[in-house]
Length: 199
Image (cartoon, rainbow, N blue to C red; front, side, top):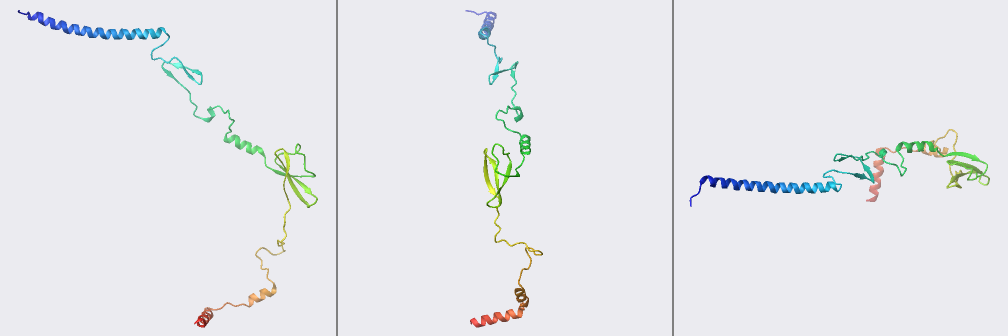
């Protein structure tokens, strides 16, 4: 049987065209299926690739497009100081305002309710003849110490003498002055006498 070449060529072209249509239709079906799915999500309240809400510690943040800007503190001053921490300036001011302990004389030990903080009370002790030192500690008066100092055995200051003064008796001074230093020859002679006696 004889074939018409023109008809055969057209059959080849038709097969290629049919394959192309099939591919394009399959792609179209996938696109339609995806579009249908997206439409279904939108109907249920969803939006593809869009952030709807972001919360930080339960508080909603503003959403602009697909971005959320969350402010993160970078300085301690931007945080809530719920523990009551103090800054260096506050600590310095508190120390400066605290005052320092001072002394006051009193006829008797003051009552704790009337006593001042940072005061050391000097109360004369009739038995010792010295002051006792009291202070308010933990809401009560406490004896801290007294001013008694035992100086027995200490040398009293003598007019015209210092710590390095020569305090020799006349006899010791005369004996010291009578001593003379040996010469090198005398020392050598004494050593040779000592070593000769040992041999």
